[in-house]
Every structure is written in C-alpha cells, then in structure tokens.
Amino acid sequence: MEFFSGSFQTLENSLKYASAKNRTISNNIANVDTPGYKAKDVEFKNVLNDELNASFGTKRTHSKHLPFNSLDRDQTIHTVTRQGTAYNHSGNNVDIDKEMAELGKNQIYYQALVDRINGKFSTLKTVIGGGN
Image (cartoon, rainbow, N blue to C red):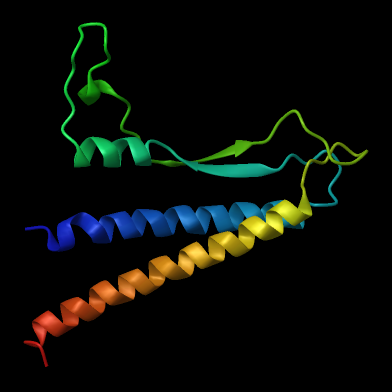
C-alpha cells in the first residue's frame, strides 16, 4: 500500500532537485570572478512528461507516433553548462544578478517543499494518534 499516493516520493525528488540547484547556483556565485568559468544550470529530466503521462491516459493514434512506454524514463538531475555567452572580458558568463534572483526563488521553492512535507507528517501523526 502506498501512502499519500506517492506524494512523499514526489516531494523527495523535488527536494533533491532544489538541493542540486542550490549547490549549482552557489558554485556559479563562488566562481563569478574566475576567468573562463562557464555558469551551470540544473535540469530535472522528463518530470513534466512523466507526470502528464501518469495523470492522463495516453493513446497512440497513428503508427508513426512514438509509443509512450518506450520513452526514456530517466528522472535524473543533470547539470548543463551555459555555452555561447560571455559577460566580461575574461570569458566568464556568470550574471550575478540572475544567479542571486535564482537563488532566492529556489530558496522559496525549497521552503515550500519542506512545509508541505511537514504537513504530510503532521497528517500522518494525527491519523496514527487517532485524531488527538
């Protein structure tokens, strides 16, 4: 039996993503003055696609369409390097204003996830205690 319809796993994966994003942003900020450093971003592969496929029944309507069950289901966190930009003469492409804004946004996201997990545990505690 799966408690809370898999929401703990979803929240856990989201926390892993937010933690990886925080580490990546912090690393970008730490290297703002490093010559030639290229900023990095974090991607959480196929999360939206998997959620949509889990929520909605999918049907292959044409033989040339890709089958949904054969799609890559790798839900791993990937770090990608931003290429093709340079914000200063040293080849560094870290935009400190963008990084600080992303850091703030990510901290709010992380705190919301923690609050949601606390709510789930509080509900579980109430149920175990018989509503007392």
